[in-house]
Length: 390
Image (cartoon, rainbow, N blue to C red; front, top):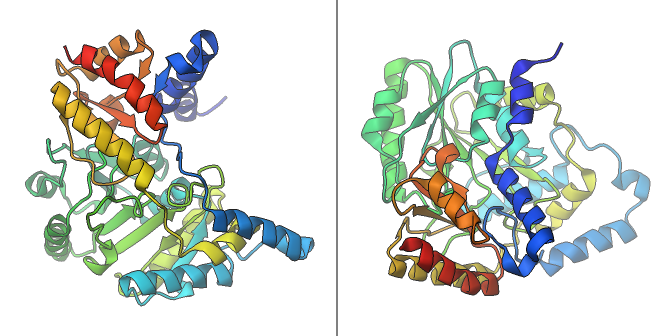
């Protein structure tokens, strides 16, 4: 006997990782130089030197028993205080260590928050395009996952469509900005309109509708503002990861931030604590917490990503592709010639070019590509994109 839903999740994996593995196998057969793999959002910026130095210094100068012991379930005070100080410095957040819970990366943080918000019949909405793993994370909490159709070509939030889907069972709206897969940043104007809408509907329904703001790409923006969502809408729960900003995707460290002025903030905090407990993700790695306590203020040098972004965006638009303007993250979301991304992906594979169809992102006419790769790979791939455009 086994759980059928878990079996289906295990046997029908994430298409992003499946294509990435296909690319690795293809490179082993025909040579890495002949494969142009744009599937996996694995940071290609070096981990900051200060982070590397912090690891070494902590390992060399901290008592090993103390270093590798459990921290409190919610995270060490030093780590939480460093993050609160950074939020206050950057956003005047009025945060304290007691508003934060340290998590093992964004996915466990989201899982805990969804468990905290789920009630019988509850729904959590997101806006297409969206990261495919949201669906199993939401559904595992017991809530229903509902998707607001995309507003192409700019992929801002379609307020009328969102409002039509809000019901008294709506617990939260899940946002991701800068967005994976589109690279779009929700503007302050968009978020202010969303705040007004959710405030009005919350009053109508008699309970708050929270925003869950998934923010692994907050620091990856190119000359545009990434608004601090709690500063616009207090009923916001932030799930943050250092995977992209500090190039630490394999280390799985981040935090949940619940502002003091969120509705039912103290009870909500305890519910998120319970969500972490229910999903088995307490006591994040102590070494990583010690590193973040020293490095929470660091931000990446985006020069390389920006160069890749500009080169690809300019070339693809010149070739005739329709591309959402990528103001953040390290993705391009491109409309497939002919409007069928799956067919385009198969044609591209024949030439060693690997991109991800948008079906699982809620936009089957588009494909996603990651430009956190070498600039040389981008330049050598352009003739293939030109041929495929025809």
